[in-house]
Structure formats: C-alpha cells, structure tokens
Length: 179
Image (tube, rainbow, N blue to C red):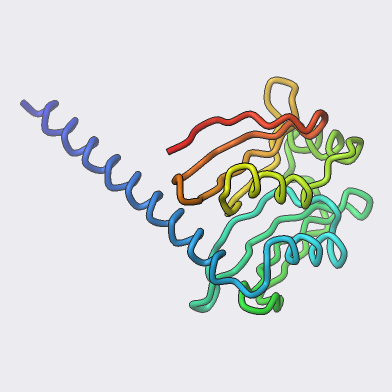
C-alpha cells in the first residue's frame, strides 16, 4: 500500500512538473511574439559586441520583464559572457564576464572548436528553422555527444512544441519531437 501511494505522488509531481514546463515554453513563445527586439538582432548584438560563439539561449525574465538570456564564449580571449537583453529594446540588463574557461568540460571545448572550424551560421539556421516549422525559436544549446557537435533547438508555433537538432558540420536538421 505504501508503494502505491509513493508511486501516485511521484506521478502527480511529474505531471505537474511537465505542465509547468509546457506553460513556461508557451509563455516564452508569447514573449517572443510581443518582442520589439528580435532574436536575430540579439544574436547579431552579442556576436558583434561580446563573443562570436553563442552556446546557449533561452527566454528569461529580469526585474519583471522578458529577456534574451544568452551565454557566449570568446575562445581567443578565453572569456565566457552571460548576457541578458531586453526583448523590448535590446538594452543590456545584465552582463557578467568570466575570464576563464576552466569550468568547461572536454565535450564543451570540443563542441566550441568544431563550431569554430565549421561554416555554421546560427542566424541563417534560425531563420531557416522558423520558416520550415512556422514557429519561433525560444531556446537552444550547443552540445557534443557521440562525437557529433550540434545545436539542440526548441521552437513553438501553431502546431505546438517542436524540438530539432542541427549538425554544425553538415547543417542537417533532424526533428526530435513534435507535440
């Protein structure tokens, strides 16, 4: 009897957590739709002003306003930048620079080096994904697994949530999930 109650509680918690994640995804998509400063503009600003390689992106909030939360790496200067830009006007609301890449593991460094060696264009890829799936990109992350460096994207559109991976070497897009 005890185990069945524990299993029921665990299932309820899992269901609530999944619902909260979906709700957050939907709110992120709404924030992007209301933005005056686009994701493309944010990528251009960060790539030009801070670091060429954007490794992580998500919609967040800072002082009750929606932000692009972007992590970028400058391999040459060995700097990691954490930047929050306003979706309203692109203003930098928060910026931290770490002058060391010691916390990056071997997979992260390998992914960055492969990204640097490739001809991958993040902005063009995002535009392609948004057009192909009729959806907005609201989260992505650079990863290396099984010897492949790829970006993992989450998109939200009228068809719901879509997840895809994009190989940085070939540019090949592989759908992972559509909900």
